[in-house]
Length: 416
Image (cartoon, rainbow, N blue to C red; front, side, top):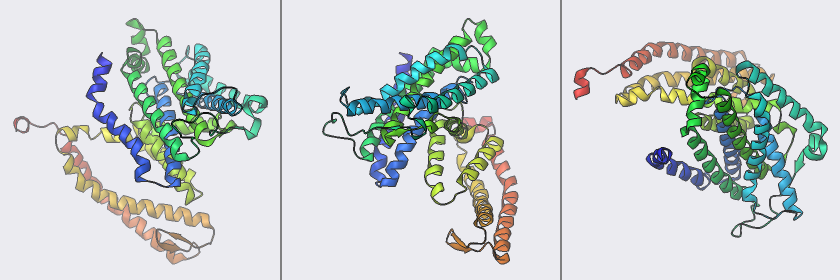
């Protein structure tokens, strides 16, 4: 009952979330936009499932792609069975197939891996991830070897006349599943098991002392995480209609770790933000530069150093200022430091790109930059240094405004 009351209180947020998911294709109606939205949908479910492990349960996993990949492989095999009329049901239920295999794999692997925590658990997950990835190249009958396997989502019964041949049709299927998965993962955080997962993460000895089994709590969280990772794998299979060994390996596990960490571990909305940011960088930034992975690495490094709680943590840092009704006082300091920061960032990126183009002139933000010209380097470096000086000059004012906005209001302010 308490869980239902919590959902009822936040029903406007959930309605707005569903409306945003369903309304995005109406606002951005293009093939590229629909493709990006499909990738975001997959990334959101995958990142949220990983947050159940690390953010809520404190289990650092380097093999989370196993459950994503296995769910995707079984989903594609199911598409093949539908194509040959071995089974007969609508493909809108394909994510359930992926979720079931993800859950079964998590039950088996979690039965022994969750007996340990910390570094030992992380190494076990890494070993299992590499084992499954290597096995996918050996057992080619099921995994298809290096080429992977493919299916066709247009076979099988239609759903109210929809044959799911177009990406926008698949997006609406993905949007509904994203909403369902997000809702149930949030509900899990409100259950005793979900709340105890936070306790086990912070202090497992105290959780044991009050009568809860740390290993059992980790196992429950692990299985739930595998279930939703498998659903994400099923969505991947529906969107791309093929899957390969790359969806099982450490690179995919590292990518979901980046999503969760950059977005903000421990905050439910954090992985959603991280999935959106990384998808945009992967889909858009990669079209403009070959060094987008370098920028991703730099962003991750800066996030770890300056925003250890991620983007969601940065947003939540303003909660006190919001409550004190002093958030407006930060607008001008943020503007004064934001503009030179953007100029500094643009200057650094320009110098990196000039170093990569090896003498070939190129267009950047409407300007033609010649890496062979000393004047070009001098102008870019001059703007960068001036922007750096502007950032340093604006820092004291921002610090003062931040302390004022987060100060405890006195009695007079409270009465007013």
